[in-house]
Every structure is written in C-alpha cells, then in structure tokens.
Amino acid sequence: MAARCPIASPLIGPLPRPLWIPATGLALVLFLVAHLSGLALALVNPVAFEQLAVWLHRQVWLAPLELALAAALLAHPLLALAKLITASRRRPGAAGPLVSRRGQGAEAVAAWSARLLPASGGLLLLFLAVHLVQLRWVRPAAGQELASLLAVLASPWSLLLYVSAGLALALHLFHGHESAHRSLGLLDRSNGGRIRASGRGLALLLGAGFALLPVLLLVGPGLGGAGR
Image 1 (spheres, rainbow, N blue to C red):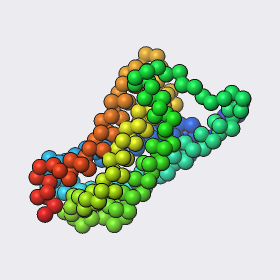
Image 2: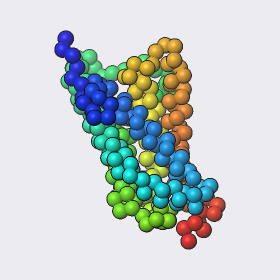
Image 3: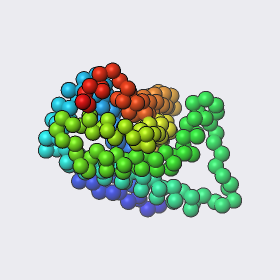
Image 4: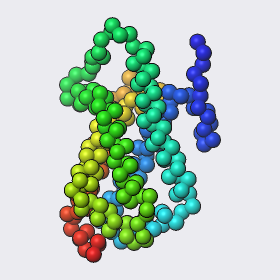
C-alpha cells in the first residue's frame, strides 16, 4: 500500500493529510477559548476590555496570527468536505444508509450532532463571514470596540445569527472533539470516557458562552453606560 501523502507546513513540518482536519479543528478550539475569555471581560470590566482590544491591535504578531487562523478556517471545512466525498465514493451502494450504534442520552445527541456536522459547520461559516464584515474588515476605532459590537447586536437579525452560531458551535464540538482525538490517535479505551466527557463539557461551555454573551452584553448591568 502506498504511503499517505503528507502536507508540508512551514510551521510544523509534514503532516499526514488525515490529521489536518483534527489538527486545524483543535487549533480553532484553542482560539475560541481565548476569544470567549476576552469577550467575557466586557461583562465585568468594559474599560479593561477596551484596553485589551487596543493592546492586541498594536501587536506585530496579530496579523500573522489572523492569517494562520484564516488558513485553518478555510482548510478545516474544505478538507472535511473532501473526506466526506471520498468516503461516499468508497462506500458500497448496496450497503444502505449508515445506522448509528450509539444509545440514548448524550450518546444519541453525539450521533445527532455527527449527522448535522455539515449544517452546523455551514452556519458557522456564514456567521464568520458576517462577523468579519461587521467588525473586522473595518476595525472599530480605539476605545470603540464594545460600542461597535453593541451597535451590531442591536439588530434583531444580527443577534439571532450570533446566538444561533453559539448553538451551532456547541453542536459541532459535541461530536467533533471526540472525533478529532480519535483521528489523532489520542483516544483509547482507557481515556475514552474522560475525553468524551471533557469534550462535551467544553462544547456546552463554549456554545452556551457564545450564545448567551450577546444577550448579556445587551441587557447586562452597567453595559448600557459603557456604550454612551
């Protein structure tokens, strides 16, 4: 059997093609954790949030980091789509539809989230495009990051999209976290339960955080004064 063709990376060297989907996914999760932590600061200390935004925008490494994140955001869905097409071509037509072997409760939710990965991923890509147009392609002026975000969230349609994206993220990660660890060879019988539990907890934490944060920013105490 011929060896799998690796994809060369100037940062981490050759990486086997099947590992790029989980690797880019886990990298994006790390970014989401950091991003949610920074946004949550706006709830408790709007002034510190603005100072953090100004500091970040002045860092020389921010532009290369954003380019790397953009590359991961593009590579992750494209590689996942290619994997899905390849798997569908290899699957015998007479085999019929795949049947989940998962049970009830969280296992049933995980199976459901796996089937909806294309839909949740598509919604996240739509949100990303809108979010970039609204708040990143033209950056808010220094000290106006929170005011610009609140102005965007004042639109009911934008608020609905932001909340829906948080729910889609929870659904996407509920299965994706476990799948990524399995693809990387990090999941086995001894740690499978812990990885599933931690992944699903992370999915709920990030999903709820990004879904609730827009609403809390609009109604939270003291935040109205921050935008005045």
